[in-house]
Amino acid sequence: MPTRSVLASFRRDWQSLTRQQQRQFLAALKQFIADLQKSPPSFHPRLRVKRMQGHTNIWEMSWAPDGRATFEYGDEVHPGQAHIIWRRVGTHSIFRRP
Image (cartoon, rainbow, N blue to C red; front, side, top):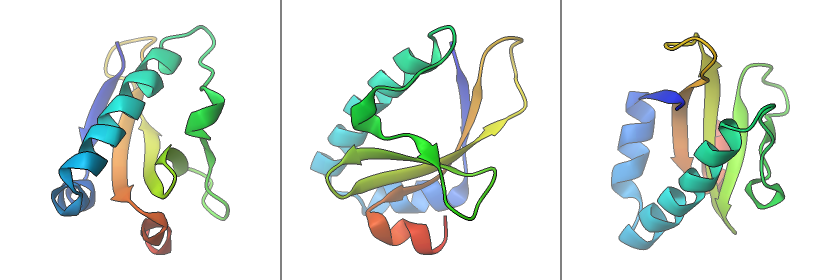
């Protein structure tokens, strides 16, 4: 099972999401985790996971029409399992400071 950590910026962003947005993110997160557990990991096209342009270590994910999250890969906590560091969550506006 992948492990995760959350930056303070993600926590602040999370608090500003509506309950509906939080539910949408959590639904997409289930798919994200399942995809990480594949060998090799491959993400469902609807998540549109890709590296952020201009940021070599930051990735982005879509979880709703205007729902985005940024993350990076950290050092593995458990060998062979990805460690995800969630950076931001919200609308396209999070891309100004990913």
